[in-house]
Structures are given as structure tokens and as C-alpha cells.
Amino acid sequence: MANVKFNEELEKELQTLKDTGFYVYIRTVQSPVDAWIVVDGKRVLNLTSNNYLGFANEPRLREAAKRAIDEYGIGPAAVRTISGTMTLHRVLERMLAEFKMAEDVISYQSGFNSNLSVIPAIVGREDVIFSDELNHASIIDGCRLSRAKIVRYAHADVEDLERKLKEHRHEGKRALIVTDGVFSMDGDIAPLPDILKLAKEYDAILMVDDAHGEGVLGRGGRGIVDHFGLHGEVDIEIGTLSKAFGVVGGYAASTKTVVEYLHQKSRPFLFSSATTVPDTAASIEAVKILRESEDRVRRLWDNANYFKKRMQEEGFNTWKSQTPITPIVVGDEPVAQEFSKRLFEEGVFVQAIVYPTVPKGTARLRVMISAIHTKDDLDYAVDKFVKVGKELRVI
Ligand SMILES: *Cc1c(COP(=O)(O)O)cnc(C)c1O
Image: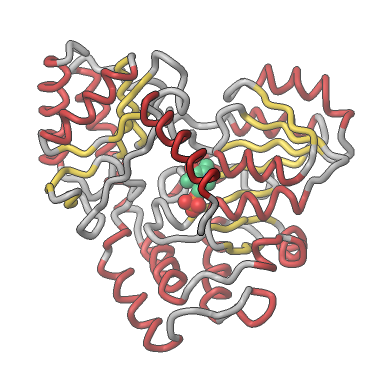
């Protein structure tokens, strides 16, 4: 018999989450992830996925995965350091390194795992980390696991970062500055060149997590380091294969030395099995497509700019967005929830993001634009936003 008291405690907590509006209700997608998807039985325009380039259901990725299964089977059945490193992992890492113009790459099972892998491997008890207050949960967890002293600086605020460096740099032997490249809830870009200057001045390692910049920023989607032309200057760049790449997996791009060190020291690499054959093969195909042409990335930006401009013309607040992540800030939490519900009824799937994920009073609908949306899709979305926005007196 399971522990009754323990289960009752959890039931109480779950009820509290429901009563206070923090419970997450999970929807089920019943179709491939495309511009239009079937969610809980209803066909809706998809404005929620991180499928920036449409790779999640791209025929070339599907075919690559199938071919690889025929040649290599499904899984490596081991961690990378025992017998889990297959030809495909090597090929992917080489191609990513070339794509990112980095000396070398180590791939992991996810972006989340990449941060858990890298941060505790490079800093420890005697060191200090400077972390943007809006950094992703996986960075926060990676920092905690490292046992280093953690100093948070105000979001994307270079002056505050410098103040914190002045005050705390001496408390660590090694210092690490870590930031998201593109911030997932606001769609703004980290001021990387200024942060880099401080990293040099204060002898700190600089690490950027480019999960939402991958396939989006830079030439042909090469990411934030390429966007700012900082190749060879940023110490470690984290990437994911689960957003623009449409698959699953993550990686760190760095010098040959750092990558060699991570092969020896990153625990999820040493103690958790390698990514599967179809995932790895599909990721390789995604890099190939990006290498061949910038068309998809250009279409993504055309769409993002078009949608943002039209929404602004209609009187919506697109917040700090500088990327295809387009928050539509509506203010109060219940308004955002109702807005999302009404849009869904109208055939548009957009997630409401509320406190505590974002500050109180800045509740928003987070629109994720993709290269595979047509202009008709975007017009459809704007029409529905206007209709519901007027209904709820947001505009
Ligand atoms: C989404 C995200 C991750 C997690 O990536 P997964 O591959 O889904 O595990 C890590 N870091 C940042 C900044 C992200 O936005």
C-alpha cells in the first residue's frame, strides 16, 4: 500500500495550485506540429510552438530519421563514454561546430541537460557566477548544482552587472557570467558585446544560452554570436536542437580544450544515455538544410516583422520584442487567461503567460511566429486578436 499521508499532502498542494490559478492544464496535440494543428479535437492555428523554421514535421528530417533507423537501429543503448557514441553523434558534432564557426562541439540529450552538464563542470564551490535575473530554469538549476556563489544581476542591465562584478568578483577564484541569448518571455536580445567587454575587464568566463537564437539570429540562423560577430570571443555557447531544429537534444560549442574537458567532466554525458539514432539523424538533416539556404530564416523574419507591425497598427502592445517571439501584453492575469481561451474558441492557439512567470500586471499572450505561417495565417490571427481584443476592451 502506497504512503497515504504523503499522497494526501500532495493532493492538498495540487488543490491549492488549482484554487490560486497556478495549476498547469496540459493540452494534447493530435497531429504533426505544423502551422495548423489539432489540439484536443479542434483544428487551430498554431502560434505556440518553438517550431521557428517548420522542421518539426519537415519531410527531409522525417526521411533522414527513417533512413538512419534502417542503417543504425533506434538507440545507442549506452552512455556516450561507454559505447553510446555512434558515427551519427560524431557527424552531428562536426557539422554543428562548422555551422557555429566554433572549434568543437559536444552534444547532449537536451538544452536543459546542456546547462546541467556545463555549469557544474566549469565552476565550483570556490567560484562565483553572475546570472541574469531572467535566465532560463536550466541555467538556474545548473548554477545551483555547481555550488558556486550565485549573484543575480538586473535583466540585461550592463551597469548593474558591472556593479555586481565590482562588489563580488573577488569572492570567486573563477568567475562565470551566464545569460540567455534571446529571452523567451520578452523576446529581447542580451547585450552580448557589452557583457563581453565586462567579462574581459573582470577576468570572467562568458557563457550564452542561445536556445531561442539558434536558427533565428545571425547569418542563416547561426545564432547570437554570429549576430554580433563575436566568433572566438564568447567562451561557451549553448544550443538546443529542440526549438528551431525541431528535434530534441542540446550542445555546447567552444574551444577544443573546453570540449575535451567536458567529455571528461559533464555528468549527464557520463551517466545518461546518448540521443537516439532518429533524433541525431534528423538534427544532422536540419543543419544541412540551414547550410544550403537562408530562405527559411528570411521567411521567419518577414513573418515576424509583418505580424508585429500589423498588431502594433491595431493598437496592441508588443513589449520589448526584437525577435519572432512576440508577447502581446494585455495587463491583468484573468484578462490574459480569458483572451487565450476566447482565441482558442476562434481557432487560434496562443498561450497566456502570467505571474509568476512574468511580473504582475504584465500578463501576456506569447505569440511564436514560424517560417511556415502564410500571410493568410497571420492575417487570420490578427483578425481574431482584434475581435477578441475589442470584446475584452484590451484595444
Ligand atoms: C528551452 C530552453 C532550454 C531547454 O531546452 P530543451 O532542449 O527543451 O531542454 C534551455 N535554455 C533556454 C534558454 C531555453 O529557452
